[in-house]
Image (cartoon, rainbow, N blue to C red; front, top):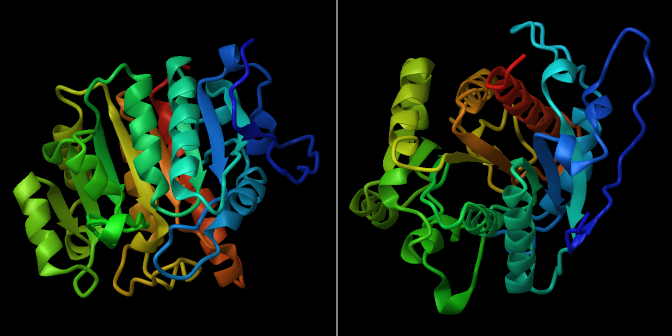
Length: 320
């Protein structure tokens, strides 16, 4: 089989054997043809605006995720019976070159998508979503896609003197026509973290904005249904981009930008599970977890739980 350039094996810690448990780390299949979901790490945080450390997240999240059991008590789903997951390793990033790293990420994603796989991507800073979504659309032959973004921030910044950052991915995608504003939903936005200019920019593009306060007060099922209505009809599917700073720091202190008033762990995990269960869900990226800023490991543990919720949701949409 033709190899995929710029991928290298991931560093994984062994999962202790247990005769009564199948762990997520045991779901690995050895061939792309047998897999349904491809896990890819992108250990890169050169473009982050705030505190660094997200380049260490792919390895840390894998270690936590692969120790979780494959059986989901809430749904009764056994991932070992529903999913084929292949860990393709990490993209060979270039820490001193954002543009080259983005080019490699987009190329890897496009090749993986062309092989019919859904994506679970572990970043890395949020600038990487630009490359991931470009690669996803390329792999789908240029067909329109929708995006549901979990984030305390719009990330619609304009590059200053060409500088690419973790705050620019969605602005770039909109300006370049890769993403239509009416196909973008932003969940978890916070006051005091976004300017009037970018809120007005979002309205001008027709982006649907769901502040964190509405999630706290509202019906998660209604919010999910509203988001799906924007991203499913007339598209080849939708992608979830999940920035861990959408969570309140009580749940996720190990992120680049702390966001008091953000989502609870239950809110974020429940919404991801619900959205990933839709058959039009093409994948998810999980960004901005910074293990060096997470001394007790709670942010990494929550990131792994978000990834697990995505896998359970995906398994729900697949035949038993």
